Length: 447
Image (cartoon, rainbow, N blue to C red; front, side, top):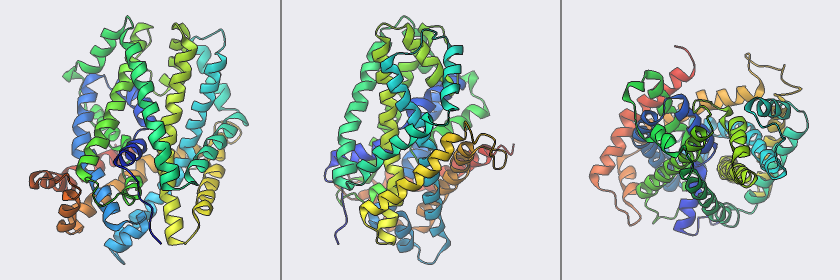
């Protein structure tokens, strides 16, 4: 049976960028930048994107395209009966956990999209919006229903297959996402606080660089590209032999970073225009921004578009996460595409419902002092992803035959120079594992 492949180069870029672009760019990046002082954090993030992000993206691409298999099958081919293969189970477990709790936040964006269309209440102070968000998130019905609705949309796309489902929807959703981003950027640049916001984002104060800022930038660079999961191993297994891997990795990292910068250019001018604090943290999106939109001309339109943007970014990311498990079930257990999709999304619906309820009726049910939502988040983000990223980096840097690395990076008409290949291998051997290890150690709050 022939294996599915992406049909076009545009499909390759749209799906891989869609996998990387998510809440980490549009939600996490602005508040991390705000908390860590602005432009200096951005410069460090750019630096780490290209010494951690691009090499590890290349590593996942090499494994996926060379084997043309799901993450478990790939390591079984490349390192049979060796411990390296355990990284596949790490990736599958992490993908299930992330899909479950991430879908809760995506459900929030769907709720806020509808709420934006209907209009927020008359009292749009940040305190009132904080109370509204807490009331919604701690409910026992609405958050769960939105989570299930979001996962049902994932099922409808994924069950149609690689070309008719994933690739076709990515080709539609990604241009819409970029169009909304650019429209927002133009609007933000015309605000009175645009200059102050852009100065905060692009004029670095190097005295603001501290160890926590450096570690924050390392973590943002690693997590924003969805590394360590196996998303890009799975997607690259659908690449054709003439897909240039290094060029695709650079485009993926570049567009992923471009989206994050646009998000900053949208949010910080608005924050300074309306007298809000750039270091507002995670509440920036669901509490501070609705207050800003309420004061803007055409606020209903802008608010609706913004939360629609978050929804689209969430959807392209969760599709790639679910595909890890679906490909595994189809190829390792010979399940049908629809059966594997139903099982994967069904498990996510059960776990996602529990995560949604962990802000409400299940709030007192804790494991190691954490609610299920926080446990899934902490376990995947602080433990499984960094370990997976380190193993993949070390495997391609040290274990995989260098001729495989060179031939894969050089294939596809975008021939990588020997110098570029050496840089990728050097980063995979030395820089990326050390940086990811630091993110892992400090993410555990040991120090």
